[in-house]
Length: 165
Image 1 (tube, rainbow, N blue to C red):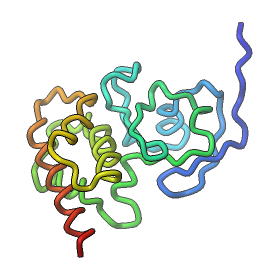
Image 2 (cartoon, one colour):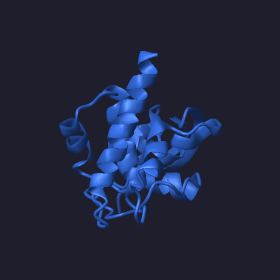
Image 3 (cartoon, rainbow, N blue to C red):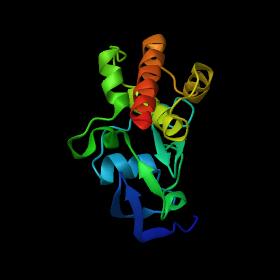
């Protein structure tokens, strides 16, 4: 049996706050977020990193957390969907989803929002083709794709207008 390394005293920056975590190096980040830290917004989907339900942002990049070992995020900045309503402020993406009625069942939405946020953080005025490309790996079984795309476009316009003020 392989020796399992434990991660003791590891620190990550989670939604802007220094957070100490511990567990086996190979423990998926998704498990740590949901079961150890109690952040239930990130969802388990396929468990293989192919559906996008568990997408979070690590150092500015959208990644699936179900297949990302804890050791891989040592010292990194991680954002989960909970950051969209942190400190009493609502991110333009969350506001746009509500305004466009873009959520149906909502199961996939946290991953979609984080993929969209990663894009808009880098490219607030992303063209529609880039938005579609950024969301391509996120599956939505309800068929809310067009409303989701409209919501991301609205958030992009809101963020660009705020930046130009």
